[in-house]
Image 1 (cartoon, rainbow, N blue to C red):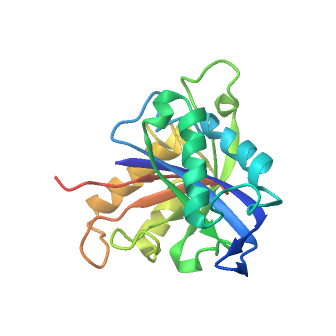
Image 2 (spheres, rainbow, N blue to C red):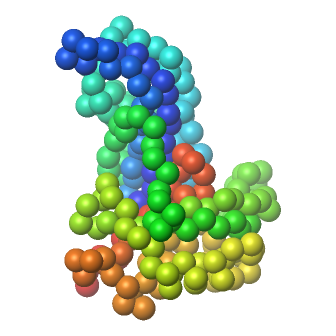
Length: 226
């Protein structure tokens, strides 16, 4: 199973249970698919760019008590889900699995829970003029969500860390992968590598790889039981 996430952050004022609940919040759309669409996407992240524009226009630096009937995290999630159903393309709406609201500053993963690497790529089979078709680079972040507690990260096995840094760091991904080097494809390759080397979660379940190209996007692959 493939999954991607798109995030948009905003600063808001609100009242929760009679007390001030002003905060920084991050809205996250999660989309899933069993198969990737050409050129190797769950959906093109460009199709989700309207999320940030909507958040900026309607939620950011607003008093949600005057904007939403329910300014709680659940109410914000319901508002965003309605927006998504009304504004995203039909083929994108069909893949929407969850809308999450994360409150407060998102903590950076601990050093043993992440692999940072830099690499460049260009994606093939995109429409003429698509920016991802240009030769460009990313500061990638790899993490391993706990399959038993998805809100928690697991330590990255040293063997995986060494493999990622030796194979991908400071490389052109097009030259070291046989697949179009989307984040979805790379997450699947790394998950398969973990399974091949019999590296699992403490419970014995298969590990899931999450790969972020940017601070607001991530792709993840889950190897489902046979």
